[in-house]
Length: 325
Image 1 (tube, rainbow, N blue to C red):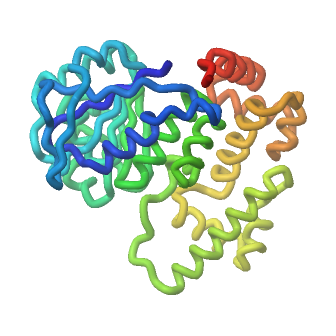
Image 2 (cartoon, one colour):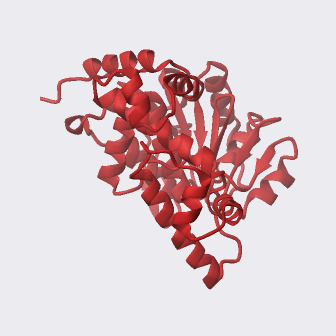
């Protein structure tokens, strides 16, 4: 059972708490998702007031962070509000033990206040990025990605990108199939890489038309990942020159067409390794890699395991899941 601690305190955003609860709270073992133990950890045990007239009842103290496999920090509705020192100390101790710590949206302010983001990359909602940089000049603040990781510390941009980060953390720990099953139950997209752009600056009707054309190209490309797809091919589908297509693609997604294709091909390969018994060369072919050697190199760099080792770990995860009956 994967243990997830959400750090709660007065004033946290209800949306962030709802996202965390929806991803790790329900028992979805009947659709192939491992069971999680989600605990609301607080400095005090009494009811916690939230914005909008809501209250929350913690079920664990901060000492439970020592038992957690993952710590998640919701944002405060007012990012500049201080966080009690015992909470900051508990976050520092969890990170020092090697536990991944993730903050949603303005939760980056809390990690920065704890001193955890000094000299590290971090992201928050684009409108709060200048404020975070001014308040914590030692933090390497970015305002474009949806989420970033720097040495075990995860931060995300605003609102929906918190869902993206939570699903990505499930994907890393439990595989693409588990993350996709959760996404389906939430009726949300299963995979957006962290380097997607947060927003389109000053959209215009022409920009909207371009965005629609690029979205159609991406959807078509996902149906043909097993085929050779060059920038020239994608540009032709969009009715653009390759140079113009590449420029618009980066503006819309925050990454190049090549890197976008590579990420989705690797994710497709993960699903094939989890779901099928296809030999590794066949997985490479179906995921669109020109050679098995290239596939192995990219996959090992991306996941940290060779394709065969990843398949073995996925099999162990499946057999270790509790019987849903």
